[in-house]
Amino acid sequence: MRIVVVGGGPTGLAAADAAARAGADVVLVDSEPRLGGQYHRGTEQRVDPRVRHLPDSTVWAAEGLRLHVRTGPADSPHRTGRVLDADALVLATGAHDRVVPFPGWDLPGVYTAGAAQALAKGQGVAVGRRVVVSGTGPFLLPVADSLVRLGSEVTVLEANGLTGWARHPRAVLANAGKLGELAGYASLLRRVRTRSAVVAAHGEDRVTSVTVARLRPDWSVRAGTRIAVDAVCVGHGFTPRLELAVGLGCRLEDGFVRVDATGATSVPGVYAAGEITGIGGADLAAAEGAVAGAAAARAPDPPTGALRAVRRGRQFAAALAAAHPVPSGWHGWLTPDTLVCRCEEVTVRDLDVALDLGAADGRTLKLVSRAGLGPCQGRMCGRAVADLAAARLGHPLPDADAFHRRPFATPLRLGELADTPLHPEEEL
Amino acid sequence: MRITVDGEPHDVPDGRTLAGVLIAAGRVSWRTTRNGGRPRGAFCGIGVCFDCLVVVNDVPDVRACQRFPVDGDTVRTQRGAELPG
Image (cartoon, rainbow over all chains, first blue to last red; front, top):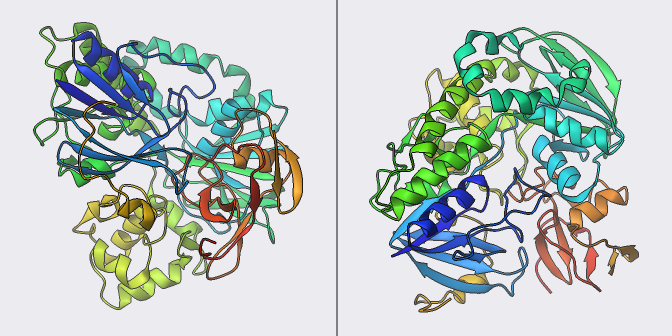
């Protein structure tokens, strides 16, 4: 049987390995030239030699167990079209940084924390000399570490306190490995200010300074001061990359793909693992990948070690979510002119106008305000738009997955669409 | 490996994306927005935000953070929405 794994990060690597060990014919499709995903960037990763790895390959649509793929240099009109049929799919599409908007977040020199990490760890490029890393969660530390190693002067602002972790001693102790990983960043802790955040970026054609504010626990602003910077890196947790799962009709639960203990989604033959099923870091993601890969390939014996690691990792994930929430006080950081949707340049004011006109669901809100209709397809603004609309309306949007619905999972040139092969390849 | 960016020659080390090349050279923006004409450069750095679009060999809408340049590439700033050609 053929298993197609989508995504070459820790989850996809483990899933492909497990499925290959179970004797399946495995194809691993990944959009990057090298395996490892965002987590392992800069270090070489290997996969079972029986796995056929398709690098530089983007899945732009899924029709049941048939995937449409383009292979070649990013966004080149000369990529090769491919149709892949699978007996089972493992979705391991991961997550990207979540960023809450603030005035000036569209200025050049403001990056996501993930961007700074990809440039620093993957390419040895520092985004600036005087850098503020702002947001919430343990991921801010490795980003700061990478920048410090490149000689940047770094300040880290954690919007929450650190006491949240103390309420989950079992989860912390059961994941001592994680603790060790964080202990490696101990020397960075003197650079960390808690209950603080960048709440505005300033400059003409690039960021030159930021307003750093002391925050209350709900993230409303106590008081701010202005400091000079040449780059800002922001990350307020992560957003799962759900478009393929949503396109395939997989049920969601609390914003993630719902899976059973084997990684099976609500759609027969479709498995999901890693950050699209809940944010918990690379160890948990890899364990979930191993479980889902084995199940998809119908391995005779359940991978007991991986199942144990999943249980342990999910405790950590729950503690992580509890210790690093994103409360709605950030709504107060915005002005009417603040961009919410970067692509279509839709401001808070534009969003309010659409809501005043009666838009009360995600789809209407998109069509009236244009938020989420640009080339990023709502990836950057979707959650912020849904949060702001819910606060204004007094109830959550009824179609919360509207901002994950992308029949084209990634933008495609019209010529490429016309050039789509009609039949799957017999041999790769 | 050598490419030109807005007419200026740039040496490109192996394994560096266009965004990496531009940022290492001190640039922060290489696109203007369609409505406001505002400058933009890299933001998400991992191919999801489409803010870092640039024109490569007369083809617009190429994500600089995802594209690995090849020798001789001609790269220029993208102004608003551009058609290929």
